[in-house]
Length: 120
Image (cartoon, rainbow, N blue to C red; front, side, top):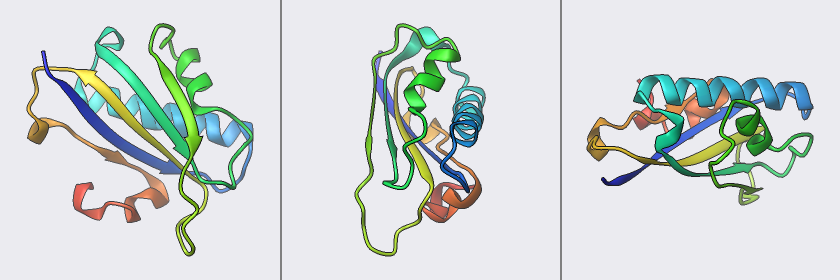
């Protein structure tokens, strides 16, 4: 079975545990729903956050959602001058028979500005 990458991103207005948790839950729930994913099919997840966010690990939120056996990592996004702040990103690797064209990448809130070609 092929492994496909699913991209997603969202934004928060404040560096708070509550906002990061809520935004991460919303993003992961939408990715799961739109791509019809079962947690057993998730191969791994890599989260990044912009340097202004450090109040919560997005991976901890995923574990709270039941992703207990999924290998996950968190890291900093590149700090490019002029880039959006308050952004949470994910690269989710999923075992699926779907083609790459069938994958639905999810961008929410201010993160829609990152990849307007994938929003819609």
